[in-house]
Length: 432
Image (tube, rainbow, N blue to C red; front, side, top):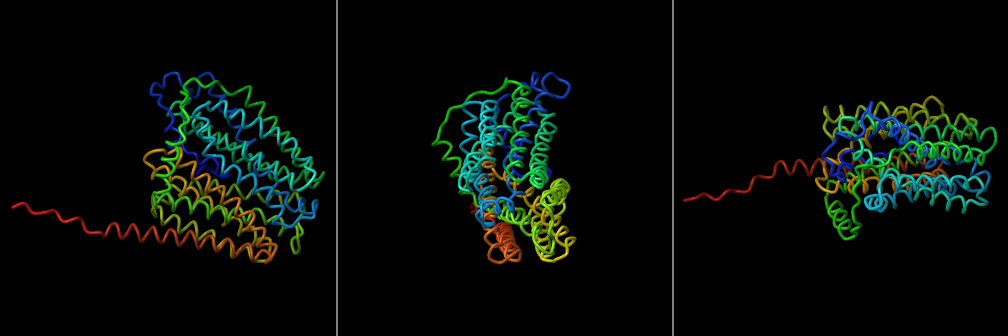
């Protein structure tokens, strides 16, 4: 998992290289070679635009509720519709990029998403706002589905990690700065102006991407074969370990989506009464994910995959319980622990997918992304409903239930692995 990202970048290097048959790397992009810096800036800009747009309404939900007279659960669909549509479209978009090209898919995705983003501030009703956000999420699915494959095909292997790191940095900065920008603009001029500001930021990023992205020189078009795709997807879903990893990713994101969808409602109310700009700045806590996701590899080396998951889920649970306090310091520390636990757990689960899948890694990672964003969509909506009916304690209860699900799945995996190790080897017949 990349540092402090929203997760869409979990289409990993291993997944991406599945599509690239190129073996001659002499003329591929690398630091110091023509086009590398342009490519880096272009994909950084695309990452900023993608995740600024995807979560643009999350910090604005209390203002959206007030404007339309909507409950937290109803307003939360402005986030859930976008992430849910992205989840459903990642897999087909990845298949389309194999046929029509990575650069073309990324360009089309940005153009459609940015165009819709300019109409979003003028939505006449909550229903129209949700519809526009769903279209935006579906369009954005084409970018993470294509960006990693583009890098794997166009960049020298030794420079690939650095190139992906810059794209991921764009994801992180876009996801965080979009929320902070909307919070402060909304405080001054209202939530519609805030969404307009994000739309203009995305337009600027799209222009940078269009003029700076180098043409693809190593892409080989494939054929669309729905039957082959279905067989690959079916084989992944038949794998018990992959199913567990998909469920773990979805459950972790359910917690995270619920907490960050609802936290704004809690902080603008008594006893905190924080202004909208300060609430938006709460998303700076995302920077904690930089540390915890980077540490995930060391945790796995020391504790093993399941041990790292136990530590991540324990940290998340501790943060949920601590956030029940009425002191702002306790709530902020709880958010730090929830964020650290989420990013660490997500890093372990997402990286394990590519190691587990021996074939069709791109589809395996796309399925993980689908589960991950479905968890985000479910968490945002259910968390808001829980908050409406039971306050913050209701949202925490939902989070703890999801945490219990992760623990149960991990325990089952631990016992299954232990039983496999203890299973006696088949007796070898003695030759007379």
